[in-house]
Amino acid sequence: MVSKKAINSAVLGAIVVVIAVGYVMMNYTPIGTTSGEDKNFDVVAFQWGFEPQFIEVNKGDHVTLNLSTDDVPHGFAISEYQINEPIMIEEDTKLEFIADKPGIYHYYCSIPCGAGHDEQGGYLIVKDPLEPEPEISTVTSAQTDVEITIDGIIDEEWNQATESIFTTLYVHEDRKIFAKSLNDGEKIYFLLRWQDDDANNDGTTETDRIALGFDISGNADIAMGAAGVPHVKVPQRTIGEGVVDIWHWKAFDSHTESLNLIDDEFAGPFEQLKEHYYRDDDNKHGGNNDLSAVGVFDEESQEWIVEISRNLVSGDTAVEGFGMIDKQFTPGSEYKIGFAVWDGGRGETAGKHAVTDWGVLRLE
Image (cartoon, rainbow, N blue to C red):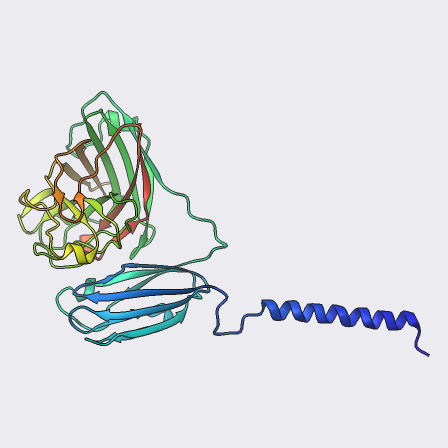
């Protein structure tokens, strides 16, 4: 005869098995499905860019991209996800995939579409919600009563300033931009350093460059660089819904054949920007250029040293649909700041460049 104790043990064991199986079934995600959210994006390809330029999702999300083109046939490709989808004229294409690989992935045009084809791209950012957010870089603009000479030389006053490090995330990861800032109540100054194998500043190659970006609208992406043909009415870069003030220094400017040229530019939504110039080469477009900059290449340390200055409050310019397009600064305030850097020796130009995430500029 089976004892009551044995029966109770069998019943208890069966209950445990049922509970365990139920728990597993409730938490089981079959292969090819997702436990994340459904994310939908309308992606427009054009010569030569994508709008949006950044697509941000979480690991496990089911992503749907509604692809279309504004002009000629393009392609949408992400190598790491084995995605390569043609985008044809007057045809809407739906692309679906599971974002199961955390990281930053470059998407690019896979169908030759003209002179800027190689520069057409954007970034899929797949975040892991379990991973902590990276620490935000902060550069403090300390007060000084000394007017800084803009000559690319590190004066004693700079030695007293705190240096911050901004690390690039896109295209070429982990490049370091070392940044210092000072202000004297009238002007703001920046001292920027970064490593480079050689000085590309004579027009025989693409030129070395650096750019500072300041978020004007409060909701801009961080990209800088060309997404259209320079000097015509095409945008500097698609920036989602936001507007960015860009200070763009070049070791050599091929259009003017001059050294140490800095442009005062801006970037914003593609559709609005199609009707506007974005540069200020002749002080007619992109704002009044109140910037000064000088860069010196140190052969021994193999690094660029660039000094930049501008009045805290500039002679701003209003652009229809955007408002004023120069960032204005007030001591005691904080601002979003980001950087882009180009290595001309590697053939980097326009949209081919390394970019940091947004950091913080704090004025004392």
